[in-house]
Length: 85
Image (cartoon, rainbow, N blue to C red; front, side, top):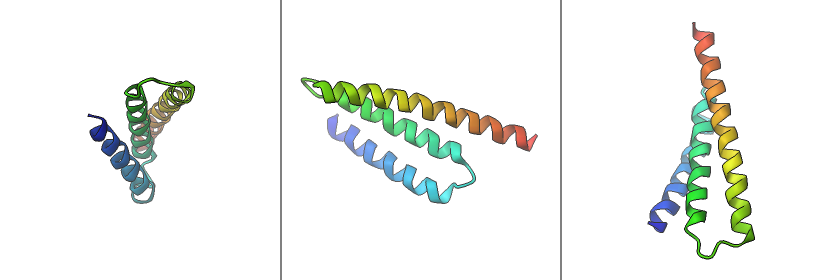
């Protein structure tokens, strides 16, 4: 399970990097990819035993950043829908 999460983190990071170039006009794709990557990092950090102070800091910071990326993704998605209408 740990290896699968690690590979998913790498895959989502690669997808986010490619989508920065390929989907320049669709920033919500990048935001959701980054949010997914951050949540995967949080899940992977929970699997560490024992979790030290740096692990807790990573969990808190990645959780906050993931929420911000989700909010930015929803805002840019709604902004794109209102422009098309």
